[in-house]
Each structure stands twice: as C-alpha cells, then as structure tokens.
Length: 278
Image (cartoon, rainbow, N blue to C red):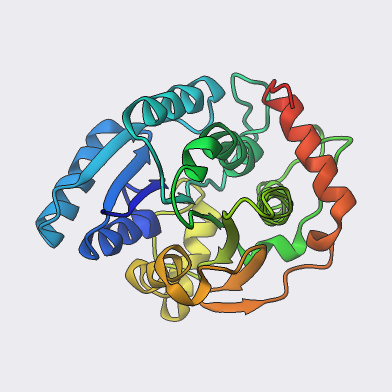
C-alpha cells in the first residue's frame, strides 16, 4: 500500500521539493495550496519529474479558518487515512495585517494554520500504522516569546517579532501535541530546514534584499527538502517524537520551548482562537 502525505504550502519552495521527493519514492502526495493555478502547475511538474501520477490538490487559504475547515473536510471525505502530515505553509508579513478571524496574519498562518488543520485531521492520521506529523519551524524561534496578553501584538508589532513568536509557537505546539499523543502511535517532530533559497518572504523587500546578499550561504530547496523527507520517511526516526531538528540533526531548541506551562497555555489559547470545544 502506497504511503500518503499531505504537504501544506507545496506549490513552490521546500514544500514542492518535498512533494517531488516523496513522489519519487512512490508515495501518494496531496499538496495543500492557496492558488489553484500554481498548484496545478506544481502537480504537472511533479508528475513530469517523477512519473508518479498520484499527486492531488487541496485548495486552502491558511489565513482563513473557514478555508482550513473546508480543506480538512475534503481530505476526510476523500481519504481514509494520512500516513504523514507536513505543516510547511508560512509567511513573513511586510506589514501588520489581520485576518477575517481577527488574528494577526503571521500568527494565524504560521501557527493557527498548523494547529487547526492538525486538530481536524487527527483521527484520520491515527487511522494508519506509524503515522507522522512534521512541523516546519525555524531557528528564529530562539528569539521568540509568546505574548499571551497581546497575541496580536497590537501597538507593538514588527514583522520579525511576529515571525519569532509564530515560530516559537510551532515548537511549543510540536512538544505539546507529542505529549498529548503519547501512546497513540503518532510521532510529532519539528525542524529548522536551513537558510533556503526560496520564494519565502517574497513580498518583504528588506528580507529579500538581505537574502540576496547572503545567497552564497543559502541552500537549495531540494537540499532542504531532504531533511523534511528524512523526518517523514526514514526508518531511523520512526519511533522518535517530540524533538527539534536542525536539518537532519536532532538538537536542543530554545529554553522557552520546553516550558510545559507555556505550551499548555498556548494550546488553550489556540482552542479558543479556533472556537473549538476541547
């Protein structure tokens, strides 16, 4: 039976490279993307490169909880199981923006997108042998803190502060979910994928200017994706859960990320922001 993976933000960059590498291994791949045209181009590219026609699309805007719920329902209605969920979609916003759910957009896409989609698909994920959840974070989380009194960073926003907060949330979420799934047979890990040449932050002119000057130290999407595929598919890590990786190296995350009180509080706040019941 083919392994099946759902990869978010996979019409370009690390997500697309990951999808292509898993497809080349014979996996069935579902790419969750906002832009349908770009998604279909990505599917054609993956099929052409791998010869694997088991590549599908789920259209979703991770800034909108209604869209995440619709995507999750489509997955649940179409597929009996997911072997791997790879939460990869993310943004670095150039200006302060709020979603229709009244959440600061960086936090909404980078954390709530991971949290809500995973929460809604958990039963489907559990319905297979040795399922895995992989969350793409960043070493930027070392500079992050969770401002529970001002999650939206109202009157205190800058693009990097919002990004740092969201990436710390990814690590906290990974560890808390791993604890909550202990004994369920599901592994949950996160990774910093490296400093990658991709379209990430393409609307953030200051970031793009810095990245272009540092292009010589960045790695390709294909090289970065190897680390994601390692956590998604390697037998070496099939029983490991609740860890942070810097590419393929298991390492320590920030001191704050290990604070279980903060992780539980973030979980409760995320439940509230998503209007979930438990």
